[in-house]
Length: 223
Image 1 (cartoon, rainbow, N blue to C red):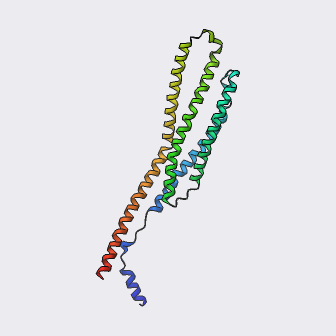
Image 2: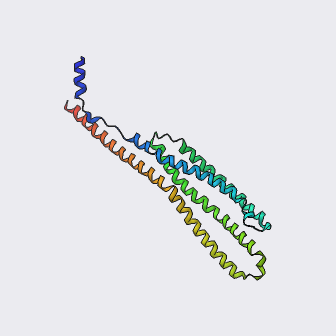
Image 3: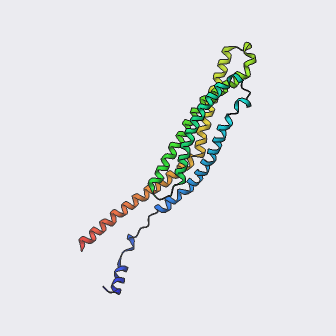
């Protein structure tokens, strides 16, 4: 076969079989929400670390009775252990996002599900610290009313503190849910959209490959 015959054979090939998948573009789009997510997570990591250290000075700032210091710092040590465990998992997830290379759908899918798990972990962490915060509130209230104990109606005190506890608990839970919904859910939805687009693209590619294979079989059969 000479050069002219090669040119003729090349030009006779159908260009309809050439298909450029959009996977690379879609995977690249994931970097944009993940970059924003990394910045949010980095800021929150420092904020949470500062808050944990700040809580150590609460007894002095709230004038909690010194007789309660041992009890307070026992609960503080417990909250410190819980916080260290959570922040370590938080850091590991951040590092995984930081090393994301946008090369495969599976890696993006893994980050998507880990983000969902991290949101639930954030809820569990916050709700687990809520009883410790309520104990601190009880210590503060006790310290403020300590000089008036003999004039206080015990029943009325129990009722008022129960109402206060329920109110603080409900408000805290709503704030935590609103916080994760505002700061993390948008990125979760963006990643879900990209994954849906990738899935749709894969279905189109599979359909294209099946049709192309059928055409080749028919072409070979006709020859």
